[in-house]
Image 1 (cartoon, rainbow, N blue to C red):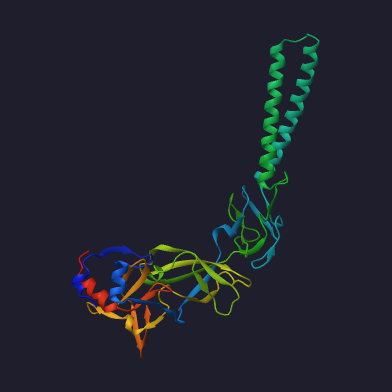
Image 2: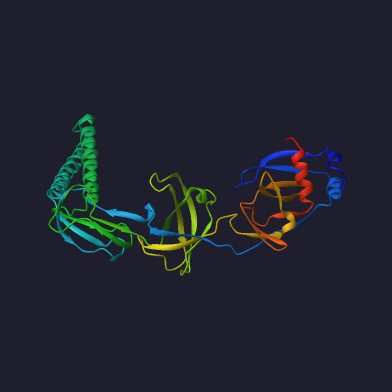
Length: 349
């Protein structure tokens, strides 16, 4: 082997590998690679232990709705109880409301005004054709008719949105099909305008929420799979909270459940997560060297690039070693790693 001083023409750089700390990269020419006798092998993945945690099934906000009415009233009847399925548009509650009666009375009044304005406009149209009235009078009757029509349409809309039948009876209907989660009022109770009566939800969308130490949570990315032992479905990670709980120092993760038989909202479930880089990889022990008291390996990235990496855990088994904390499917230098370490020690980035 050539002495280290013969390898002055190589590059040493610092760069980031996604998901890993900044590391040093040696770039060698083809002749230098041959002279050092470098040989690389693909590390073989071992079945590592999964990180276990407890999660809780929850409902996403977009799967939940409240049932309410825009008018105050007295609850006369409730049709559904918590846990019952409710079809879209089903009558869920009836209330008695003085304001609902007033809306009906106002609508009747606007109807009478509309009838009167329409008759006046029709009469003035006829008189105008006969030349018996001025154009200004015809314009005034037309404006009065337009105003009456607008008022009547507005009061019709207000009555329809209120859920009132015009006689003071309010009907609250389900805005979507789902399951009743909560009954928030009782028969005989007086409620305010827009006060929630029920909370309902679709169960075809379920989240799994769990908490992990920040060091583990930071290694996960959206799209990561989360196993639920004993269930046919699995979770797909949606995101990781940007803050930790001050009391526990744990970070909340949220996953979307995919598959049949989802857990019930509020139910606690066991989950298994495989942290990237935590899965052990098996390689020849000759790949290992040491630098500053830490285990060192070199990842062969091709085209003469060799990245220095420090495994987080090393277990020697005869002529092999199990390494953790490396990129999945890493190709490692198994012959010539000591020479690369020497180059690294004598180089200045």
